[in-house]
Length: 303
Figure (cartoon, rainbow, N blue to C red):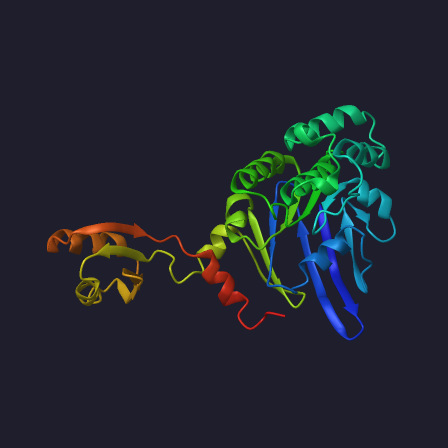
């Protein structure tokens, strides 16, 4: 597992990470969220041994990242922010270099598997500096998974990818998640909902929330609300506000949303719609809105 124990990083008088502690276990895909400057990348750099913490430590599969750094690093693959590499190298030469550095027993097989997974065959003999941002990101992912690590730490893994490429990377993460620990830093909330089974939100280097995506969405004021698209939403709002199951009615962008005061809101609204004979273009039960919860949690916490 990953164990972060009172991790702290200071730069002069500025504290980037403030005594952060958490664990991540096999099978968990952790979405690491926070506003810009929250300390996400700094935390990842300390987990991987790229930065030494001011205080605290981290253990990867029991190996302390400070005192047993090489053993810890052998267990993990890391895609840093920006996917740095050697631009003058071809894709194939770069992956071969990483394979030698990793002391992989069968480098040709490892390279072949990574190239196939990331669809890099067409650019294998092309220098990295000539690739698009999306392809450079895929090369970064290939080097991270080259040695089939037990732990993957990915900083913005789909940054710069087109929608099809994002889908492929998310599918790759899902395929690998059953027997690995995966930590993903991202600004894309839909990505967290798509691939993660756990969410951590930090700001100013401190933990603000630690939950499942479903648990986060359930915090939304829209959770179990009912939204209707119909003519004369003002009139409908007046009628539905009288229901005991309704706490509040709100019209926004032509849509009427009624918020629950108790259980049974959807059947109650549906019954009124049928009794009144309203022509409703759409009626939907809201699961909740992740972006609203994120904004509420991080309100006033931007760097």
